[in-house]
Amino acid sequence: MKARKYLVIIAMVGILVLGFSLGALTADKPVKIGIAQIVEHPALNAVRDAVIEVVKENGYKEGEDVKFLLRNAQGDFNNALSIAQTFKSQNVDIVVPIATPTAQAAAQVFDETPLVVSAVTNFVEAGLVEDYSNYENPENNGNITGVTDMTPVKKQIELITELRSGVEKIGIVFNPGEANSRYLNTIAEKVAKDIGIEIVKATANKTSEVKMAADSLKGRVDAIWISTDNTVVSALPAVAEVARSENIPLVTADPTTIQDGPVAAFGWSYYRHGRVCGDVVVRILKGEKPNEIPIHELEQTEANISLALNLNVANAIDLQFSKSALKQADRLYYGERLWVPEA
Image 1: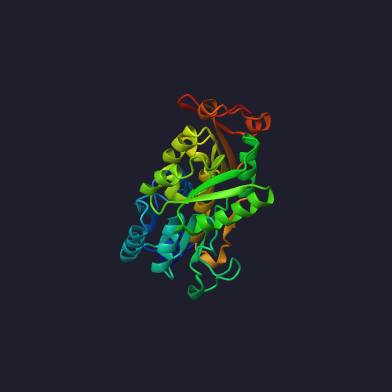
Image 2: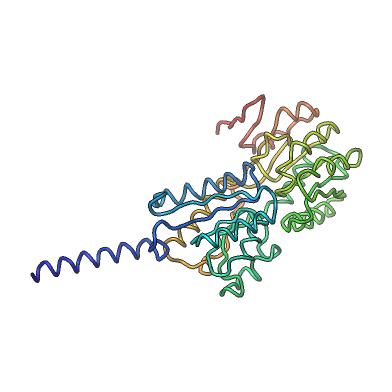
């Protein structure tokens, strides 16, 4: 009897050790992970898919250990807020808001549930944390961590001047309601001023206004730059149509948009961005708290940064890429295919 008793005790200890190794969040399986993106487009989709991929790679089986609740706000902040409230009523264990509006909505609803935020330019400017080094309690947004996608604005503006000489005015179409866009515009204006270029702004409060905003730039600018503005990126072909008709280069900060009409797209690999975000989710699944995990900023390395060039558009606007641009590019769009140059 004593031997059986010891065996039972050993078995129970083994179960407890296994439970602790999976983290406190797995006590009531499956753990619910709510993933909300502001709109449907390739960059945000890449983040979403990469997060799910990383969680699964770490041994968490969908349906058994974790359950993913996927939602899309269709570009509407009120929808994003409603999604966050629904997640709360469903007792979601971790929320992964993708893009600034969904992150802001989630932050309004949750003050304890971990929020692993991604595709947000500046967490402080967006009102998500008070300070990058001081968010230690729920009142100070201590339930928030994640990965910033602060895009290399200076290099993007410099790329425009490299693609087309004599650029004096660069047009920007943006949604003034997006905190990330306002912040990036401030940086773009400073960069442009330093090199003697004027920024001309055109605003679009929603996707349906993007075409009209782009049209307002006709005859007024020598090139167009689009940041990681979710409203504008979701209607990018409308901007591309204007740039093409004006025979001017359109450069975006999102490499996944290259098939939508820009001549060049330079910025983060959002798949890589999503994988880093997924790593953070796994750390929380294993028991770490959000305020124990610093907000990540990816290094601007070849693995994280991508330059895509659209040869179709270049031919249409009579633009020739420099040897340095072609050498740096890791994606070329030509015909109806996206080509990956050999190393």
